[in-house]
Image (tube, rainbow, N blue to C red; front, top):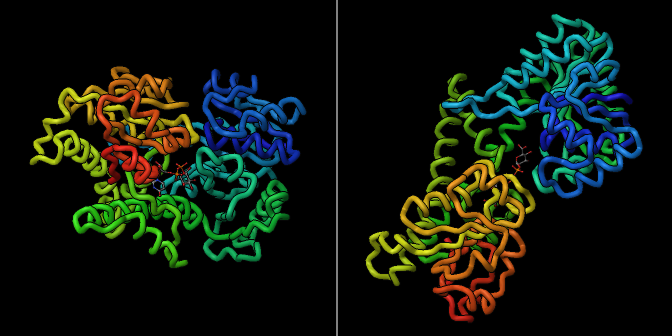
Length: 453
Ligand code: UGA
C-alpha cells in the first residue's frame, strides 16, 4: 500500500520505517528540510535503538523515502498525521499549529476514498476539528484517530509489537465489530484500510478496539496521565517512607504483587520527564479546566507538584551528607563538586526535554555547587539546552575530585559503576542514588555514604 507519513520526529520516523519494514511503500514528509535529508541519508537526527537499521533496510529496498515536499503525499491511499503537539509557549495548553499546518498541506493531495489517520497526541476535540477541515476539502475522505503509545528507547519494538490499537471513528455508536457508525460506508472502508496497513500486528493477535473520536483522543492523554500519577504516587510514598523509616523499594515490590496495581512504573526517584508525560499532563489539565473537570485538574496538579519536589529532596539529601548529619543549613552545597550521572530524561535515549536530571543539575548549580554532568548519549543536546553547564561523556573525568555523586539517569554503565574504581577518583565517598537503581549495600560495604531518596 502507498502511505504518506506527515511529521518525522520520534513518532513519524519510527512509524514510517516500521511500515516500510512491513512491505508498504512509504514517504515520510517533514517541513524541516534538514531532518528529511538526514532521514533520507539513513542517519536519524536522534538516537533511537534499532531505527537506523530499519531505515537502511527501507531505503535500500526502495520502499522508503523522505522529503520536505508536501506534494509527495499525492497518490497515497493512507496519510498518517504524526506531527508534534508541543506545549504552548507561556501556557499549559497544547500548541496545535504544526498539526493544523500539516492538515492544510495535505488538503491539495486528498482524493476520494483515501484515508487520513491522526496519531499525534491532542486535546480532546481536536480530531473533530481536523475531520471538519478534511471533509470541507474532500467529503469522501475516510478519517480515523489512532493514538500512538510508543516509548522512546523502545519505539521500534513498541511500533512493531504494540499492546493494543485504538481506532477512533466518527459517530458515537461505533461498534467493536467494526460496524459503520456514520452509515455512509466511509468509516467501514477506512477501518478496512487501516486493518490492511496493520495486517502484521493484527495477525499477531494485537487487540484492536474501535471507539468514537473523543474516546480515542482521551485514551492517550489518560494513559500518560495515569503513568505520571503512578510515578508521583510512589514518590509521595518515598517521602512517607523517609519520614517513617520504611523502605520504599520493598513497599513498591509488595504493592506491585497485587495484579490490580502492578510493579511497573513504581520506581521511586527523581520523577518523570521527557517530551511527553510532562507536557501531556499539562495539556490535559488545560483542556480539563476548559471542560470544567476540576477533579482532573486537581489530581494532575498534585502529580506535577510531587514530581518537581524530588529535585529539592535530592538537594537537601546531598546537603545533609556534605554536612555530615549536622543540623543542615544547605550551605554544605556551596562550592561542593557534584557529579550528576545522567543528563537524558531516561536511559537509552538522547532526549533531554524536561529532563529531571538536567533540572537537578541546574538546581544544584544555582544552589552554589560546582556541577559536572556525565552522559553517554546526551552531551550535545544537554549543552544546547544548558549552555553554561559542564557536560561530558567522560565518566572518569566527571568523577575526578567529586565530593558527591548523584545517579540521575539509570544508564546501565552508571548503575553498574564499581565502587572501588569510583573511590580511587573522588574526593569524598558520598553517593545519592536518585533513581533507586544501584546496589547501595555494595557501596556501603566499600566504605561509601550511599543513600537513595
Ligand atoms: C511515554 C509513555 O510511556 C508512552 O506510552 C507514550 O506513548 C509516550 O510517553 C508518548 O506520549 O509518546 P516516554 O516519554 O518515552 O513514553 O517515557 P517513559 O518510559 O514513560 O518514561 C517517562 C519518565 O518517567 C522518565 O523520565 C522515567 O525516568 C520516569 N519514570 C518511569 C520514573 O520516574 N519511574 C518509573 O517507575 C517509570
